Amino acid sequence: MATITEIANSVVATLNAGTFAQPFTAERHYLPRFELPDMTTLRVSVVPKGIASQALDRNRDRVDYRIDVAVQHKTDTDMATLDALMTLVEAIGDYLQGTPLVGYPQARCVEMVNDPIYAPEHLDEFRQFTSLMTFTYRMWR
Image (cartoon, rainbow, N blue to C red; front, side):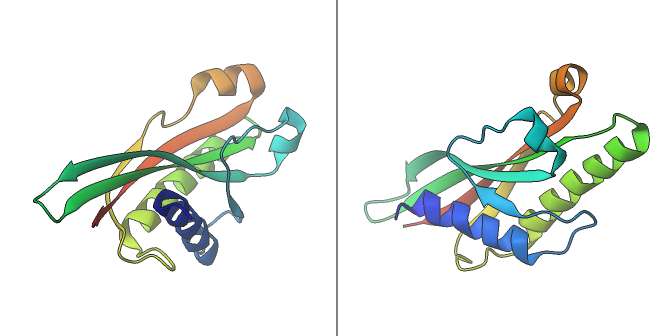
């Protein structure tokens, strides 16, 4: 299995081992597409995104694996509901940055980018909250 896939699976296992204010089951996908009626269930999707490698010397490379984590939920657009979803996104970000990956502790989270913090067009058009975080896990090999 490819290293990036193993890391993505470990992100799923780590998220599912955590305790969050809103319950969810994270799942790994290559193409996370869902029908709008199915989005009434809170979805946390983990997707391998990219790899960047840099030679350190003749024998070692520094490799960064980027993993996307999306939080999506078709929901009411009231402030309390959206605030709770934003709090969940922040909690997931903090948790993954500070927790060694289940089954893959050698991959270290070195960066998290939350962009978009939420997608206004999804909220406006579909009444769906969508937030995307990209985590960079670094390894040396």
